[in-house]
Image (cartoon, rainbow, N blue to C red; front, side):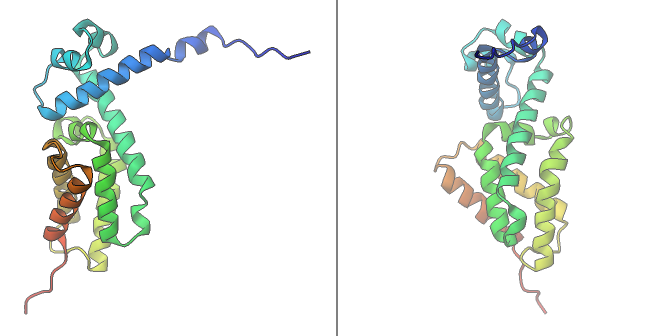
Length: 199
């Protein structure tokens, strides 16, 4: 006699978002990332237009702009941190680690631009724990190895790297992703590379 699979409880069904609801939320978040990456003053109406839904729909999913930004920040930090962890920057020489870190952040795209801006970062304490701290550790390792100049604080160099990534992404990557990654990495390393001390 074939066993019958148990029916999910009412509570289980209510906790699991229906596929359509999840798709609409993802569409709105993607549109918000594109819109907000292009300018911080974008309104909820702008987001609705970019998502191809009505403003009321956006507000049903995200009751305030702050809630929308928090959800976008949570997605971006999780995505960036997962990619950074997967790139294993701590297992390669520091300069290769920088290149891998840049690739990990660039691949997140517009959501990273939005979350990296100061007004969102301040409300996202996990940004420091999951992104800034590992990047700072990478820079410090490069400084100890003599690959990255030690005359500047590692925290300052890390913020410079993040600013270059945001600037490169916000410019629209006119030459494509690979060229953007190479340009950001080269620009950072040209400024951060250790130089012989003058005597």
